[in-house]
Image 1 (cartoon, rainbow, N blue to C red):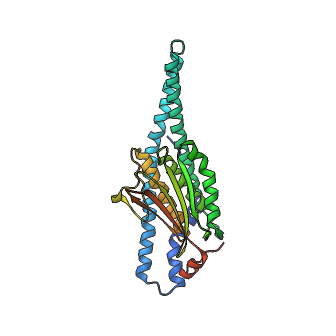
Image 2 (tube, one colour):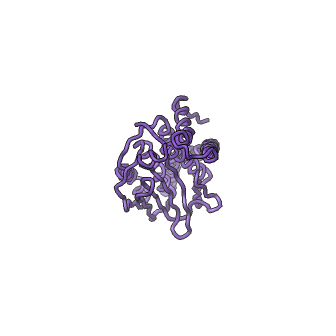
Image 3 (cartoon, helix red, strand yellow):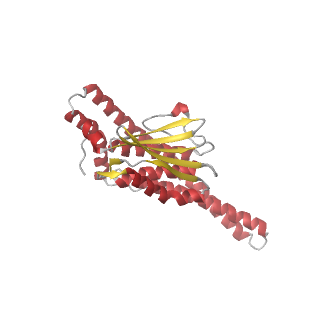
Length: 290
């Protein structure tokens, strides 16, 4: 049985307060907002929290089985190789080692998933906002994850990165982008390419990550919590994607921004991050202190 250490209660409470008080702050500082708008925003925040909780339960329910499968394969082929070491042909020994390697890589990916999710959850704690150049965050994360793309034979291109600023927690935003790109690398076929673009928007910055191939099923698209679907992928991969985007949605809500996905047959899947700048947040009455 896998045990997961919970984050400190204080961090969880602060993250929840940041998410649910954001619409209240706007109502208090901007009398033009109606009570109906407030109720809608609170309902949206509640829906996102419930989606994230459901995604966590589904992901953890399947993770134990997913981790046992490659571990069992490693132990089985290692034991079989030891028993037949004296009679194994070089070809069969090479096959055993290949299967052990593949299972080991699969297990490493699963452990990487858990590490990504733990870091993303930790990033939801106490956020420290400052007006920072978004493109520097993008370039830093792209350079960091590029070796992963190279190891999987997937291209990674950063195009049209405009000089924009955002009222952000640098590490929290970097962790969101890191998880999105890692998910794209693990979900893309060898020889394909993932494109990252950053443009100015009315509220600040619009960041997009595009990958070819099958992604979100049109019937399951959701602007609040996009659940990515991978062709030929396991249920745990689907649960992982849903959980990642649920947590990313919470982090972006705390930033006053949002995340959504768009799927098109001709261009594949694009994940968007809307990152507001300080002036747009001030205009909406959503003041945040650094």
